[in-house]
Image 1 (spheres, rainbow, N blue to C red):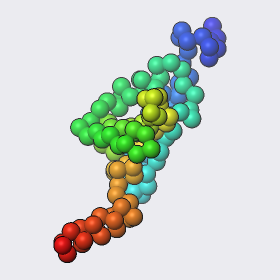
Image 2: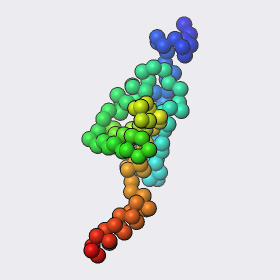
Image 3: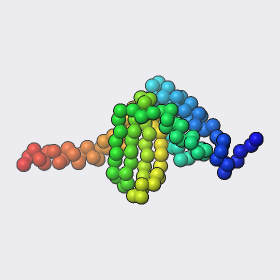
Image 4: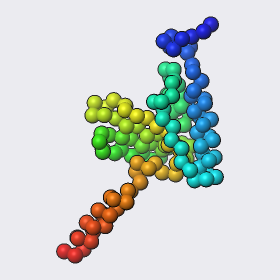
Length: 129
């Protein structure tokens, strides 16, 4: 029996398993070359439940962060070290983007040079007062 995408009962693209294999290869690449990988979950067609299966397989780790810059974003470490779930929302709390980042630390939480320079200036000013 063939299922079409509009028939949610029993439909499975298999992309959930493919993404998990891609994560495995990306982790190996991270260890070997220190090169990060980002997977855009919204750019991959998935049947209902597949995204949830990916998240369930990855689990939730000990670190989570919430940012409020141009709308809220959450960064959640998974139980797999080096694998992070990053979700961006609009002001209505609708998901704008959802990514799996395979990296030592997501770039979104890394301090940018401009921010560090402003912090350095602020600290220098406070010390000179």
